[in-house]
Image: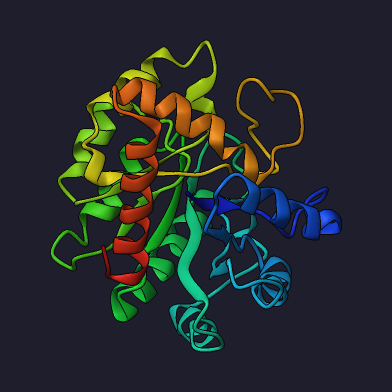
Amino acid sequence: MIDSHCHLDHEPLLSDLANVIQRSKEVGIQKLLTISTSFESFSRVKDLINKDDMIYGTIGIHPHESSTDIITSKQIIESLNENSKIIGIGETGLDFYYNNSEKDKQIASFKEHIDASIKTNIPLIVHSRDAEKETFEILNEYKNENLKILMHCFTGSKEFSEKLMTLNSFFSASGIITFKNSLDLQHTFKSIPMDNILIETDSPFLAPVPKRGKKNEPSFIDYTAAKLAEIKNISKENLIKKTTDNFNKLFFNCN
């Protein structure tokens, strides 16, 4: 298994890193992708990727931080060149639910990340909340650029997923698909082709059932994998193999 999106630089994961890694390996996780959300976060990510061979990282500014942490495409590309284990750009995107940053700042930051992704052919990790129309319209502007798009913690509508499929997007399922009130989301993931699905924890957030209410960690991805296999009506082993292959195809250009 691969946890395609976690935040190892957040507590309580950071101070318990050795045990978190050990429990991850015990459930069969091969890789952990720890996600940058700010300049401060990226400095911790750069340290974390040297802690264990299984840990990889990204460079990006979360939409919540895009008013204070202004980043350019050039800076992103320079950061990618610092270490070959920085394999993704993001998370970036739009969050019009909380609006912690001005909309125009979020959009400008998103476009800088997209530009860097196009220039480097490195996958773009997208956060979208209450911004389906705007997210798609922006991504669709680059439809001829062969963008590698990963919709992280996808909770969007089926219609949104179908539009994103026209851009060859990948979709990452989080513990939310295990929640009792997530029937629409489960139906959406049932309709998404297996070739386009990854799994993640978004830990320490969004712990899956039966761990809901606790601090999430990468090893809990096992519950998400089991639920997604049930939704897709395939064995958990096949689900794990396929999502692992998809991650390696997207981030390492291999099957």
